[in-house]
Image 1: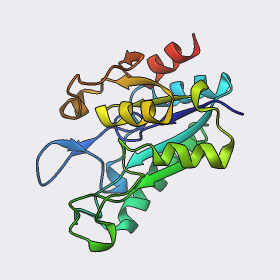
Image 2 (image 1 turned 180 degrees about the horizontal axis):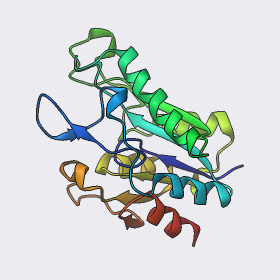
Image 3 (image 1 turned 90 degrees about the vertical axis):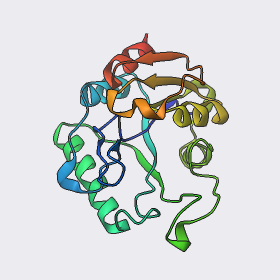
Length: 190
């Protein structure tokens, strides 16, 4: 069994961008908008150096909400992966939930077991990679990320990215709170 660190993407690996509809920082909808978050590269390197698998587990409802196409969301994914690869960081697995309970696109509507706070993406990755969930961590910037990690049996760290403050209520109790992925990785590795 291998320990892993599950990473939310937006607000952990890359910065959120202003949503054109509601004006709040949310997931980027265009590859050109991708900027890696402060500490993302250094945090990934430190976690890899300490023997963790890195698995992205991210809700991406932009297509379900009619704000982008699935192709555009995959272009965003490719850009994040490209920037990390250029910095010498390889993510071991990428898991996305494209569903939303109030989707305007019927095939992406309804309840699912992968949309965080459900633990489906983490459990699927654990099964695929032989991940030791109690020895693993979920690092994210929202209450839903922390809850998903806890429901999967992982320890959790909440990133306090200023762009995602509206996704945190203080209702969850993570094992740690950090300013960015590097400080989270330092906490996990200590």
